[in-house]
Image 1 (cartoon, rainbow, N blue to C red):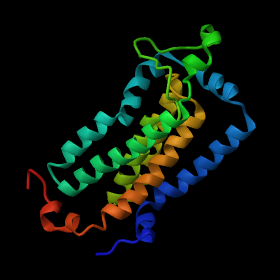
Image 2 (image 1 turned 135 degrees about the horizontal axis):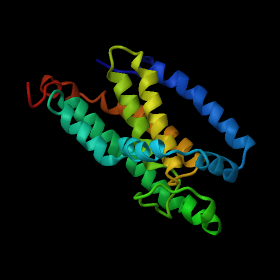
Image 3 (image 1 turned 120 degrees about the horizontal axis):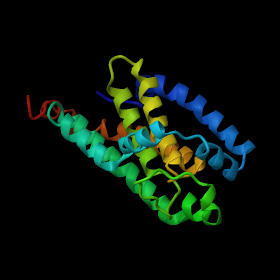
Length: 217
């Protein structure tokens, strides 16, 4: 079956529609407020519970988490596992290329003269370089697109979006990224995944019956 872009967007519209609304709000916030104002506003709102949870939430955007998800999916569907691994690979490559092109400092380095003002979460390694874009956010939004695409109940779309947004926020909470890093990561994760999904899911080999089964089948 030939899959067109309209069909892809139809399947993920309950993620895309609220995402576009959130994206517009975020862009307005970034236009109205400075990088410093946004960063220190986020950084000033913390608690012991959030300090405990944030590292676990942020790991949902880790590349290893995507690999684990793919391994689990391989038990039931080689096609879905392959789509997860390749989507993660393609989006990660794009993100890494941009990281090295922009070579942007992370908050710890950018605000090196104001470190006493910053709340850091204990036992979390804080990086200094390659801030733009947020790779964890890219992965989180890529996975959100894929799971919404596969879900029979499209009401899960906003739930997957919320999880992805939480991952993006955790990157700011942990002082690993700026607001614009997270915004860019979300855009890359959504757009590149949609394009890759459209291209790969139209390949004849991945529609063969043997690709629809998994190790447990």
